[in-house]
Amino acid sequence: MITSQLRELSVHKGFARLISARFISNVGNGLSPIALAYGVLSLSGATGKDLSLVMSARIFPMIALMLFGGVIGDRFKRNRIVGGTDILGSSFVAISAASFLFGFASIPLLVFMGFLFGVLNAMWWPAMSGVLPAILPKEKLKDGNAVVGLLSNFGYVVGALMGGTLVTLFGSGWALLVDALSFLIAGFLVWNLDVPPMEHRERTSVFTELKDGWFEFKSRSWLVAMVIAFTGINACFEALVQVLGPLAFNENSHGPRNWSLNLAGLTLGMICGGVIALKIHLARPMLFSMIVIALSAIWDFALALRAPLVVTLCAAFLSGIAVEIYTVNWSTTMQTHIPEESFSRVSAYDAFGSFALAPLGIVVAGPLAMYYGVHTVLWVTGGVTVVSGILALLVKSVRSLRSIQIHS
Image (cartoon, rainbow, N blue to C red):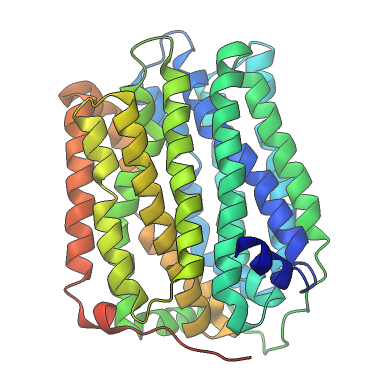
C-alpha cells in the first residue's frame, strides 16, 4: 500500500524532492540530540544544568519569534524560507562540530550556536507546515502527511542508530558534521522546489496580520484546547528527549548506544504509526488521537521504573506509534480546517502555544533531576502527559471535531 501511495503522490511535481529533503534532514536530526547531549556531558566539569542550558538554547528564540515567523510564512514563498533557513542553519551546526573536532567547545559557544539556530527555526516551522499544501491537492493531504512522516521517520531512525555509533567510535564532532551536511543538502532541495507563488493579497502591518491570525486561531475552541493541552505535553516530551533520557542512560559507557536505541525504537514506532494512519480513516480524529497521546506516557514510566533495555525499547516503540498517529491527523486537520491565506500565522500560534513551556521544561529538567533524581522526574513527566490528554477530551469540540471529506 505504501509503495502505491508513494507512486500516486509522486506524480505531483515537487513531492519526491520534498520527501527526499525530509529524509535527509531527519538523518541529521536523529544524530543531533545524541551527539550534542553526550558532547556536552564529555566536557570537563559539565553537569545536568549545562546540558539543560545547551539543549534549551534553540527553543527559546524559536518560541519568542514564532509569531513573526508566521507572518513571514504568509508573505513569501514558503519553500524559499524553509530552504534558506536550512542552508544557513547548516553553518551554525558546522561551527559546533568544529568546536569538538578542534578542541575549543564550550558551553557558552554551544548555547550561542543553538540560539542562532533557534532564530532560524522560528521562520522555518510556520513556513514548513504550508509547503505540502502548495504541492498536493487537499484530498491527498492526509496520505501526503503520512508518507512525509514515514520518510522523515526512516531518516530519523537511521540518524539515531548512526548517532550512537559515531559518538562512541569517533566523538560528537564528526556526528555533528554529518548533521550540518544533511541540513545543507536538504536546504538546496527545498529551495529549488517549483511551487506556485503566494496568492497576492493586500499587505498590512505586521501587527495587523498578527491580529488577524489571532482571530482565526481563537475562533476555534478545539484548536485552543489542543494547544493548551500540548503546552504541558510538549514540555514533558522535550525534557525527556533532550535531557532526562540521556541522563538516565549516562551511568556507563554504553549510555550513548542505549539511548540511541531508545530513540530508534521511538522512531520505528512512528514509522508504524504512519502506516496505520495511511490505512485507517478517523471520523473524529482528535478524539482518538488524544487517547493514544495519553497512552504514550508508557515510555516515561518504563524509564522511571529503571526497566530493562528491551522493555524501554518496546515502550518507546508504542509511544512512537501514538505520536505519529496524532501528528498525521493533526497536520491534516489543520490543513483542511484553516484557510490557506492565514495558515502560517495560525500554525505559528499553534506552535507558540504548544511549545510555550518547552524551554522551561528543558531548563528545569537537569536541575530537578540532580536534586530529586532523574527517575522521580520521569514519573512527573509521564503523569502530566496523561492528565493533559484527558483534560483535552473534556472539551466537547475536541471530541466531536470531524474530518473533512474532500473528493477529487
